[in-house]
Length: 486
Length: 95
Image (cartoon, rainbow over all chains, first blue to last red; front, side, top):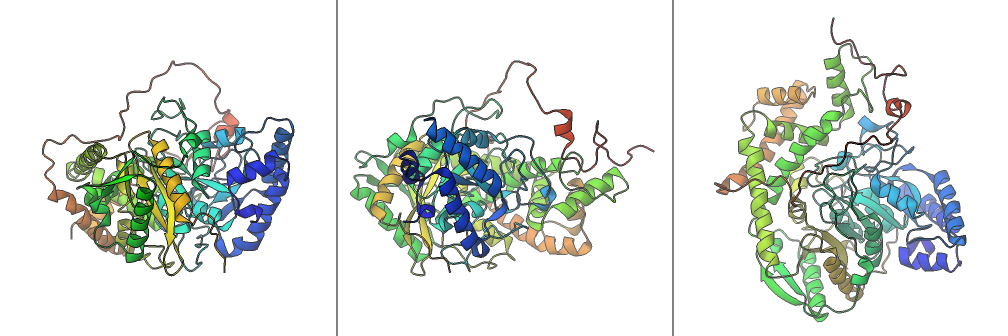
């Protein structure tokens, strides 16, 4: 297997044994980027020189015996995370020239480990989208079939990892934005419990839902990444003071005594037959590993999308009020008054999907509509959380598909925002309830597109996710498949 | 229509977004469909249900009010579209 196709833990062994250097590994990935980036277009900003300098420092760390889990590992970063001195666009023209003066908490943590940062990867504008097509810089293509979407909003992350243009990536998940592209691109995507990972330096979309998570080639890499990024941070007021276990210890064979809940609502009509088949096979593999399957019900699942498309835009309309052309970001330099400057800077800087969500959010929060929309949606959020509480009294984990269908063709849903929103129906409730969730590859469609398997757990039970996901991965037989990029 | 053209214009003005008449008519159909879908929430009786603003139990996060290192003035101004070395510069506000 080529170096660019290997996992963090495989490369870790090669680096620690001195069989390869971090500079050699980084050059290997850069050469892979030269070979395929023209067809994948995952990167908004490449930082090749910095990456080589970081790799040289990683080699010094390794020589000095001070290496850590990510020392010398080349990673791609979703352009939603602030990187000191490296342009951070959030996939928006409004931040085309924004260069953060500080690192996001998760970036500080991976840098301290000696990780190599290859650059900033594409995303839907302000993480608002499910196909990565709202990015004005580049739209990544699915490495398994370049005529198809790679999913969103962390589409660049998923595409880069699947294509061998990074060993792993950090993304963000507000309604499925790590799990859904991971599913479409055949990689592992983790959304940690709300509060598990610091949001400091993560550009805010919907603050009560946003969470940073890794996209990796296998479950062990996901656990290794969470080991590094999880933990309390006083700079994020929603960060939780709770000890961080060694998540790799959860990867052990067998699921004896584990009850997996199958929520009937996640298998309702509208599921593509190949997805249903692959996921049912995954459930069978988990039971063969010793798990007991039980039927459970999450009756308010079907209201998740409607509640989310009030709550998330409401929070976004408030968060995005900061883009006014004063302190950073795009400004219409010709505006003659302050009001005109605000209006023109925002109107010229934001793209159509962001404007649509700001309008929905502003409308839902405006005088006379607050109770009918925002309060109602927040009450439904309580009902959704209660559903989970009842379900987790009967099982340890919930298993389901990640998306109703494999990746669709580029352009197919761009004229119909509602159909795009509805594609998130199986991932959104996890965020509304703040739960951890993972997408792990479980099969392929007859057309050769990857299909993911979703596992959800109670708050702070990421170890359960990893254990079940690892058992599925060991048995599903797809973890070593890599795309032929055409 | 669930939302009139005038309401869209008023909402856009609140959000400081300029919209042409053509933008408004394009947006009207989309918003109508989206709000129509969201009306689904009204199928549920939520009388007496407490609204959830957070998914986990969060209390006020307090800390001592101590001076700690922060951005320098130059760093804070570095991304400004217009500044004079001391402050952000914007068009004149009062005549």
